[in-house]
Image (cartoon, rainbow, N blue to C red; front, side):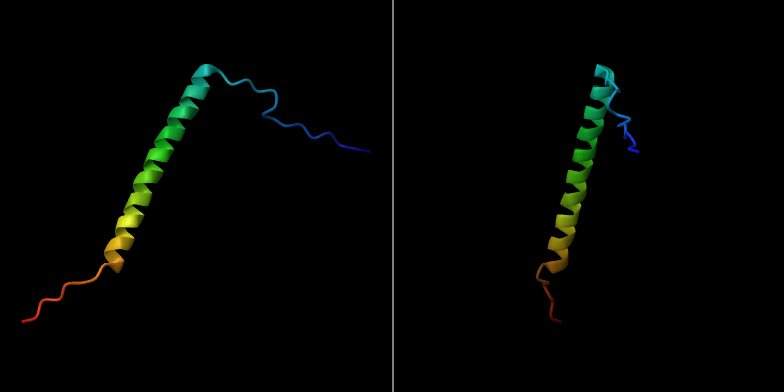
Length: 56
């Protein structure tokens, strides 16, 4: 007795508008990810930067 496994996405056809929406979301995701990584990099640079100590 074998069971057939069906892929629910196999028979779905993507319309052009759906592809455009996905593409726009991917661009937005990448842009925000790049901004976040820039903040992480800046945070690390500031955390590990040598300090200037003023003597009185």
